[in-house]
Image 1 (cartoon, rainbow, N blue to C red):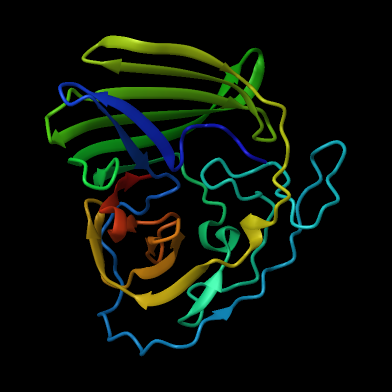
Image 2: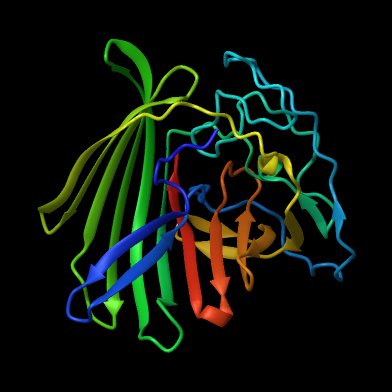
Length: 290
């Protein structure tokens, strides 16, 4: 099921005052992880690269909570995890980390974490078009999930708070976006509200109606596409992870997206979106979770 939450890998569009161009910032989500220093053992040298292999996806066993129940193989049937959009009933047969060079699916890599909040910081640089001015920006994202009553029914309340500002070529005021989304017991979106402001000046205050839920039956969620590269130590605001495990996948025609996971942390500790040909680089680092 595709959910238009504007929460993960969202396009942020902002008019930069004084330079007359549109700054488009890609802020990623499903990205974060642990809030303490890792107790991992000392780092050892990574093994030499090996040939890529593909892990066999587990059988997709999911609860039949939709009517009619989809019959297409590989459908992502609700309830979906509110952090990763992976079906809550999905059971992976793959033990992570796999053998170096193995490719795994989104469902196997991101899983179904059970946490109440996470936050990260993002630093970014990009050009709108080749030869244009280089734009540098920064932002934060925090997501919180709580069980609340909504319209007389128990619902999951997802609150996303984001900030965005530029430092080059010109310093811009900080833009604040708060999105509140409610989901029913099957984690199907009921309604959404978004408020965007700059220096307390509200530019958007909108109710967004729910869409009819349609499960994602493309099979993409269960298709191996993330290659395990090996151990790659990282340090982020949430802590140091000397035994972090790095995975990478293609982004567009010339870019890559890399993820770092750490033992004991249910979500990624770092994510980097990079396209050298377009001079794009977005580094997203965990600041906390719980």
